[in-house]
Length: 478
Image (tube, rainbow, N blue to C red; front, side, top):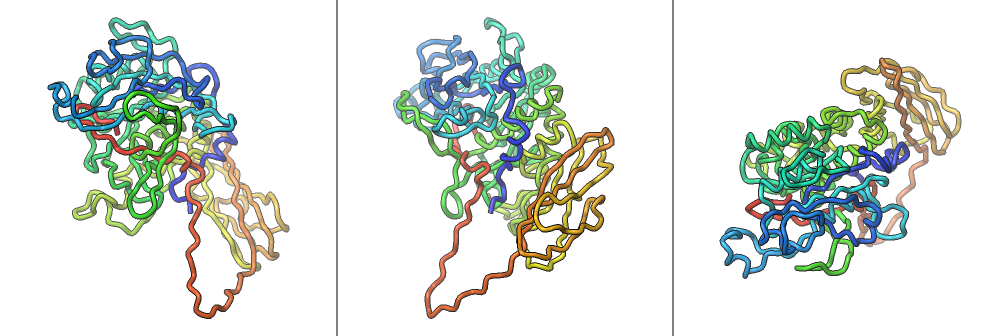
């Protein structure tokens, strides 16, 4: 059962993204990129390397127009340098390459994975190296990505409308950090950030104002054991988990090198670092159908279109004794679960949300319930209309209401459509499928044991599974 997938296929039916202009640009402010990866061919714009300190940059020079990722490993010998005191030993992460693939990997090229936005162009902005990033480099990277001036650098000719920042710090948002976020947001760029992997309350930038903070959930809807949480979380998306059973991780573009670059490949990862790009990718899909949406409007519509959190039976996150794996609420994990289809619909009009019907016996009266459909914030739904699309004819009662009923007399498959209209004349539409079938009688058995059938979970997204949480104390990627 797909409880937390993104519901991408119907969204792709509306748009696969812009291929040109500012709405096609998504900046990945991160560790740089492996530009030679075949699944990123033709998907990258000229970026910039803003890592200013040579020991951190690991590429032998300072700031320059080459955002390639040379590797960010930290070995025991590095710890002798006071600059890296307190850093964690780690192999190279290829963090930015993985995120770039989630957002915009090439589609229909007979290899690898497909990006959330098939038309998007990734703007790689390198701000981190060994042990993370200097705050000054990171803030300059945000400004440059949005097309704002940065001392000593040329103006970015391809300003991004969406910026993914999968980093976290150890302290609360500072005035300087907030000033940069305000400037970037005022320039028209949405900053999407990871909630963090510390299973604590939020720290910067996730606790800053005007960013879109994304938490991680497991496939069953519970908060991922590592994900941080709090009242400033906008919504939650799958982040992968190795907890409670078989691993369910995200899958994307990667590299085999443990230090310097090796073979371009694909890998599995987990963390809020990789939940955030899902929201960034969907925001860019929304801009493809409505380029006039502001950062605030993008956040409002994605929150309005989120599906409710799954009722897990676990203690609510944030309550004493709840533990690392806990039940998400709107005060800890945001408005709900990220939904691509309703978000894209809400870019221009109301989003239709229909409760599933499933399989029933012939002669059953079914309820078609579209009462959870949502308008764009500030508007209201003024009309509903149910029609039958396929299957033996069914007489619907209250077909002009949010909730209609009908009897499925014959064994067959039925499809019904709901169209809603808001007070500005904008429409939204979706369908629901119902099946009428006689139950299958269980066969008798003499002593055999029954196995459980595994559910094929998360097809709409879990080809994205995720990357191992990286805690680097100077600046942590999340």
